[in-house]
Length: 327
Image (tube, rainbow, N blue to C red; front, side):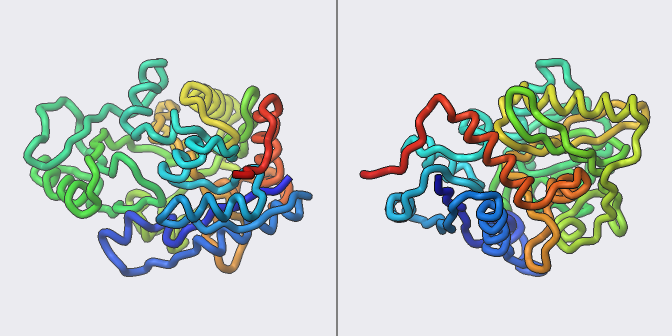
């Protein structure tokens, strides 16, 4: 069994680079190398595969390396490529990856799970009449790593809303998701597995120098991390049960991370699910992922953590023979 670990330059900072070139550190290779090392220590053969602009070149390398299953696919294009060529991979499928944050929120709300009220807008000239209560939070409809997020994304007055929408729609080039800003405790919940998914220790993000988790606050290590977060047993159960339901409702696979705000009344509001959640653990070169913190709090080593996720994927494919591509 041989795993191909995908990597590509700037994978975690692509959106932020459209706004600013300041404080951009590309740890994509270091992150993938850490994954490869953990996978090898978990007992598997593995090789790095650089994602190329021409997918045919990537396919040639997969065939050359006799790859059985791919790890670290981290974009819509990569997942679509893998499904198109029926190449097994670790992580959620196109049915979830291709959906926007808005579509995910609609599905979660349909199942009567709490999520902030919202609307989507393509430019500042099309802001609809709405009943959302200020402050509002504006973010790209697709994104990662808090790309495009600064304190101005928390909009307290209607007059400031068009400017922030323009930042998202014009500079990042995506529709803007505008939702009510819920005051409370920001948490994220890691989930691994499939049929009976395992919930990792809850992680709480406290702000040391910001009012929300901005790009610089997150990627430059300014957060104050609490893992496990300090909740009562009943609060913890409610949060974890909600996270498990969301994970299942959205048909996530193998691993994922669910971001929430816990309101003062204890309601855990769904913000988004990260299908390309950071898995890196303690490292001098790669940004430490939230799920890495959770795994460490669970007492798992990197080989145990990453190896467990790989085995969940292999179990999912057990009735579908995994064979290296030969043509």
